Image 1 (cartoon, rainbow, N blue to C red):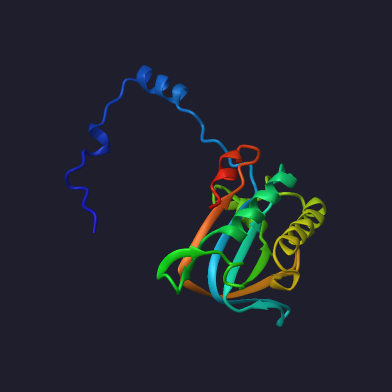
Image 2: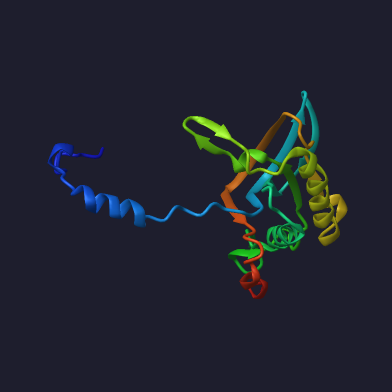
Length: 196
C-alpha cells in the first residue's frame, strides 16, 4: 500500500504563473507512432472463431496481432515480416539456451490476426481509431502482408483470421511471452544488421 503522509498537500505547492507558463511552452508533445504495429505472443496453441466456428488454429508457434497505421507502406510490411519470423523467442533444447531459436527453426506455425484497435487513442474514455488504416485500404494491404509471410516461410505454416469479422481469439500463452514490435519505417535501417 502506498502512503501519501510524507507528501505536501496540494495547498502547499506554489509555482509562479510565469514559470509555469514557460514550462508549458517548453514541454514537447510526445511523438505519435507512425508505423505498423505487431503484438507477438509465443503460444502453445491458438485459434480464431467466427460465429462459433473455428476458422484457423495452430499448435506451438506465434500469435501475431497486427495493427495497420494509415501511413504504412511496403517497407513497414517487409520489416514486420522479417522481424517476426526471426525473433528468437524459443529455447534451444540441445544447448539449453532460452532465447535461441526463431519460429522457422522450430518448424512452428504463425497465426496472424488483423486488429485495428492497436491504434486506438482514448479521447476521454472513448476510443478513437482515426489513425488506423481505413478498411478499404487495409484489407488488400493486410492480404499482401500474409503473402509476404507465406513466401518468406512456408505457405501452410501461416494462418490468419477473417478480416473485418467479429472474432473470438483463443490462446494459451507460453511463458507468458509477449513482445510489441513497431516498424518505425523508414527509420528501421539499424535493424538490418541485427540479424545473427
